[in-house]
Image: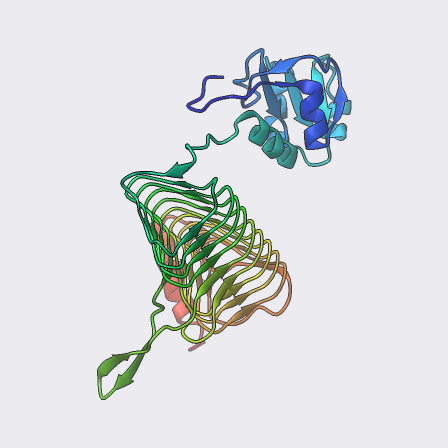
Length: 334
């Protein structure tokens, strides 16, 4: 399959060992890429994780297929296969092997502005027109993309990739192996104002944002600094594009937040939670470990137990939706 990125070919046996799958078939097959079952070519690897795509198994041209032992037992073809209980996760590992992200040249671009007091590991890459503030620290193997602004006293761990035009405000902490995509802003002021006789008085936001290790932040996502304490994103959290996280939030380890979700200040999201796209979460709430909030759900009370939570109408023809909405508004009178 043709792609826009460089492929690193792998022998099938070596790929099986790296992803932890059981190989059945010729381990000397050379894999040049990954593709869907129905579009894979003679040197591609494909995978089956959703039964609705099972129909493509018999006709796929893939060199090998990643699938579960159960699916393999029902498949009579003689193609090579990699067997694993979690084909989708195995595919993710294989794709990382086949499509390693290219690394820019080590060193500081001549147009970058790096403060003399900043401490940058020798193998760091700092791109064109990036700015690194006073006393910032950037760990080994990290990459600062073109046009990034790294504030004073920011700490960035090792092997973290900051894509172009990211802004990290002063004193924030970014862990090891994090990925921050273009346009995200880490550490802007939280929305904190006190009202006096109709006038708004700004409350200084004196905390930080702290990202633990292996966090990924999507493009144009904003995470506000704490008003007093820190806003904390724990390890291995994955946050999509266009997400807003307010000041003093804590997002527990291994949580995932989909695009356009809005999280108000001082929300505590538990470990392994999943927040659907466009979900809106009110301030000062807590969400129990393992809870799942469905897409577009407005949340006004805390969630105390794991489970699936939804709060939206299913889609209907507009006139029927209007009729149901009128009836719902009248329930209190009834």
